[in-house]
Length: 76
Image (cartoon, rainbow, N blue to C red):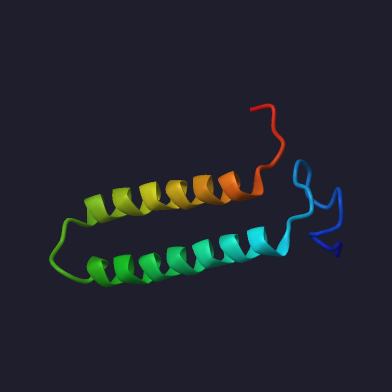
């Protein structure tokens, strides 16, 4: 397995600074904390369809935030 910090390990991504890695790791921690809370809501008297929609939007938001930090090269 190649080192993800090794240039070319993931197409479009460059090695990241420790600060950026810490930022994204913190983002992932917040994402998991929010996910745990959403799982608790699933068990209560809420509209599960809307919880599912919220989960999807939160996932998209965290992906966008992490992409903003790592700034991968892409033509899309």
